[in-house]
Length: 380
Image 1: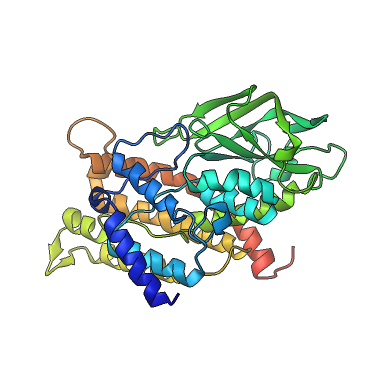
Image 2: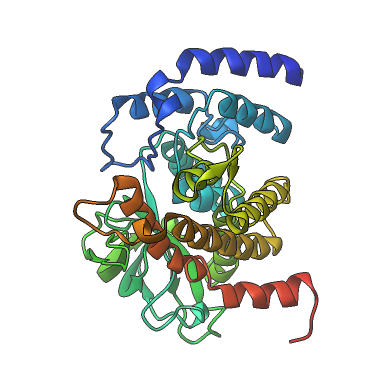
């Protein structure tokens, strides 16, 4: 099928199937067994897109994906943006564990895990960092001891984003204590409802608690739920981090239009002849927008360059949040009570939340080291 014909068909289908309420105020969902849908159209949109595999447009059709080529994906994203259609689904399943299973999983594992991700039935979280193993992740101590056809897992993970709402978790665990710290790690996936799994949310400075600590107390996991060979979890884990960092870097699918920072600045800083009154704010916004366009134009596959995009996206978002606070002035200091709008209170929390960007998904210092060694070829 020609791209023009595909565009015609995609445009027609999207016009007929994207609910009107989502074109003006989109609603994000990561799906899962615990998901709620205050706007019922969010679930309708998810189901309709999943029926075509367009929640995971480029995944193979045999695993319920859309089977689209990169060119077809760009057309689909263009047509979604044209009508302001939101992405139907997000989360770790699509951006992290799904691609890793496609690359390292067996056909049976792909068939077991990928279709439920596409349909939004399972929400995933990540079990990497530990209280004593953050940037030095390879020193992790969460144990998975063999017992017949099972592993028995003991230990804990920290900063497991969304663990209190997730259905499954993917984990790096130590399966060989006698091997070197990189070689003794395996990659396993397990149901969060497994006996012995408990979750404790961690309150953040922004007031939210999406980060958690997850504890494993004699949790039995069938060995068939290991992704990749024993002791090769570090290879799988590193590759998954590349997918994660590409996602954090902002190189994702279509995003729904929101009130622009330019429009907000005109409201709070004043406007003259249609331009933001404060020239310093205007110049900073123009620089931010130009860099965003440059970043979005790149289509490099996940590689060590993902560290560049992660670092770039982190710095860009943090600077954007700082800029927002400058624009809002004293109205950006609100936390609760009268005198501050919901938007202003949300902006304050967003600014505080952005401070974690330089830590999550690998610290900025780690990304700079990877860029220096793997991209620039600098000596250790």
